[in-house]
Amino acid sequence: MGFLDKLLKAKWQDDDPQVRIEAVKKLNDVKLLERIARNDESEDVRVAALENIHVNSILMDIAKNDFPCKVRAAAVGNIDDDDEFLIETVKSDDCIDVRRAAISRIGIKNGRYSKSYLRDRVDDKLVLAEIAKDSSFYENDRDSAIERIDDASLLEDIAKNALDFKFRKKAILKIGINKIADEQIIADVAINYISSKSIRIFAINKIRDVSLLEEIAKNTDGEIRNHAINNAEFLSELGGDVGDEQALVKVAKSSEPSSICKGAVNMIDDDAVLADIAVNADHEDVRIHAVEKIYDDSILEDIAKDLSNSNVSCLAVEKIYNKSILEDLAKNSPDVDVRRIAVEGIKDENVLAEIAKNDSDSRVCCAAVKNIINEPILDGILKSTPYDNVKREILKNRLYSDSSYDGTLKNYSLISHIPDLNQQISAFRALNGSRNVRIDAIKYLNDVKVLKYIAKNDGDYVFWKIGNRKRYPVRSEAITKLMELGEEDYVKSSRLCPSCGNAKMVDGECRECGRVL
Image (cartoon, rainbow, N blue to C red):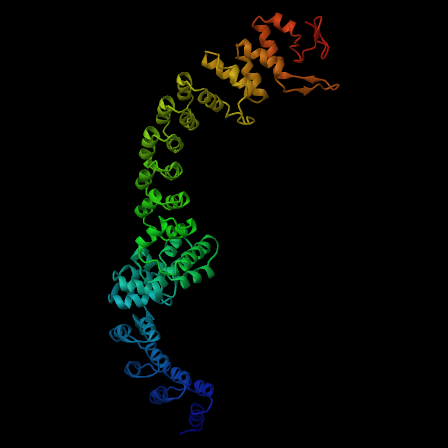
């Protein structure tokens, strides 16, 4: 034995484990390495020895025998091209580190790994489950593993123990969160499933363990945190044991304080059960809270048709998206507010026109008109409706193109007597539009009564360039139009000046602008 061998031997037998590790790394004597791997008092030294051993029979013998988990994992982690042994190890070894080491070597041959191997050749479901849980594998392998597993217990194991939430989530979605019983998994969803608020809230509602709800509250914020806190407080108030869903329903429908009843509603997600609470609970705010959680249109329709509480029925209508249900409610509900709210969700202008012409309540008709933009349809309603507020709503629509229009209606009584629809619209614009709209409308207006009112009362003025004198351009337009219609005597008797719009004509001359008639 040479001097160097003696020196190395001394080092791998040194009292300092770190010195022994460095020495072992330089050894290539397989028998000596095996001796060290089996007998050294330091697990780290034994692991270092195993890293230099590439004989499967030695590695497999150490992996199978009663060595520390860390040592067996190191042995398995160096096995090459023996998938049968590795798969059996994954299925039978009780140490997760050993199982993971075995999985990491499946498909390794001559030190090289085939990306498609796991997808194409590994069929054992338990091995696939271990692959799905281990973040050291390629994502496509973990995806493929989950896709090929149908066993609910294995999927639940992945949902609970996969290192990456992305793959815990995939397993959860494949099982269906409503079928998961393990509340620890459900709490994981509530904390980490940040892409879906509704799923996180659904998860919180399934949890009955107050400590888990408190854990969720500590690790979340905003609405999710508040929901977890509310449920925890509710369970604590009831002693932490609410029994089955029927017990929750009983609480929700009871005369207990509404905060407790709403706490019970929070933990119920079945739409049919919520509908029962919405119709039968003692407290109105509890009934409303139940409706807020329902999204099934057919169930919401049933609640909308139950007229025991108008506020509850109206909220149900607001949440309905189905066109035929809305149309049926808008035409047939005996509740005016239900019909009105249903109309607000309808887009078909022909249906809206039918309702606007036939409903017995002007508020419903107005709601229908608000959703119509087709002018011929609006004109047809305007001619037939007996309701002044509906007429005003239609005329108001005619001003929507005027950006300065503020939505208010002025002096509608002045135009209600006008029989001609186009003249009525012109009068309405002349009274309610912006300055330019009013001036333009007056050019087409022939109703003397409206023109006289504008000539005396329109308050829109500008100042002359010289002096502090006012000019009323809309009045001026109305005065000019009156004169065209043969109302010169009225203009003269009222001392109206067609140039400036002031009532300051004296002996045919305007004392404001100097105009001579």
